[in-house]
Length: 500
Image: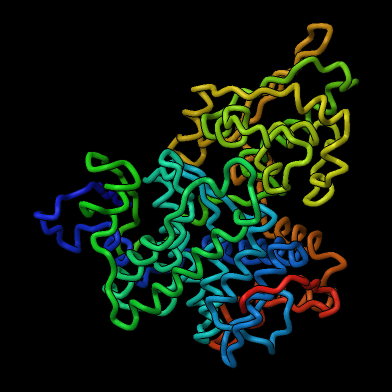
């Protein structure tokens, strides 16, 4: 691993390509490094994970809209849409748009948290769509996904976007472009231009995850993937990009992020080094913001310790800066305390999530978010008793560079009306790679079977799981086996029409 120092240079200094971050990214994208077996196995796990949450969300409004938009862009030799018959194909960028929205809608796939936030699984839909359209082999899809994860994890470790209120999809555009570059075996120069274009076009503000959170939260990464595909297409045709996109005098860093005096340190593997960053990422056992995962586990444990929840006077949650200010009371978002808030808002409210999990000793991706559930009087009472606090010790653990020590947990103190305090704390979710029961292949398959139950047939379920676990052997033109068909009558439609 090499730490690359990235800063702004005035235009009068002609920064050589070889010293630019986008070039460094392009170099590792085109290095044809050896495959790591554990990384390959994890790629398969994450494709299963994505399929699970995508199928479960097929009839949610945002996904219906994205699918109907995509179905207006038929292409004979294009890519597939989740849930739609394999014979029906659309332009790959529109497949990426629809499938990416389906994967992101429930906020239930993988995550990586460091200097910034990310859902690296968002890379998979655009890469798979291009792979299907270009008839790429299973092994080359694997290589592309590993590059995309490597680039995204590296950028998330080194550059904080949230501090400047920029949405985390700004790291997704470059990672998707890099992954496609690996998959298509493009030259370093082409990938370099595509990475820069993808970054330039995917900058947006953090408002998409602030205040009254809308369906755009699901659309945002899908949009970034779609734009990255288009950036690669232009670069393949010989078109250039704003350059240097990270280090230039009017670049992303200079004008949007840390400014002309900022210094960022980006860790990237050496050329030819195995790509293993995917092993540092983690999926979700529960359909909620990742920083809520350990707190749901804590709530379930506290449920057993507190005999009568009506005796609760107050609940104090001591946690990291990010948890307190993004999904806690530190966000100062009144919507996070509103029983009638959108699902997208409630899954970013640790106060709501903790109250429900404490009462139910469980969490369900649909039942835990219903209007009836959110308006339950006993829940609202607990909900309003919760306050979060930043604890520097938890913030320090959150940013620990050692994956084995990194913590996304909290300490919870429940004060009862009689003055007794009930305390529980957890460094990381039980399902985390370094938790008490880390997710293995069997857990991913169980999640898939649970979320797709009564939506797809057992025959289709078995076929998909067999195909994806043999991804390494799939030949060019066989990646449509990773699509999942469901009965057409089970796919809802939107009565409202758009332009297409």
